[in-house]
Image (cartoon, rainbow, N blue to C red; front, side):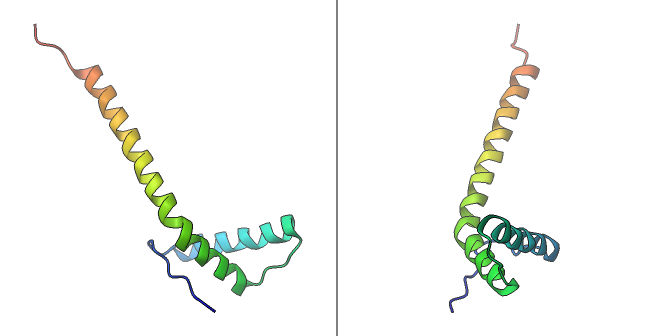
Length: 83
């Protein structure tokens, strides 16, 4: 069985436990399938290794754009043209 390495910073234990619980609940509620803790960990590791970097990069780009827009707004608000 192949283990998927996380390509991002490791999740803290509390957040990881919460995600694992959510994943198990999803499988039970939506797919009517009980998911063992081991299988939930495998799925979470796979998803984080594949989607995690993409989600992280998009979040960084979104935050950067947001901050650039705010700086442009600030510049327009504070800038006084010379008389």
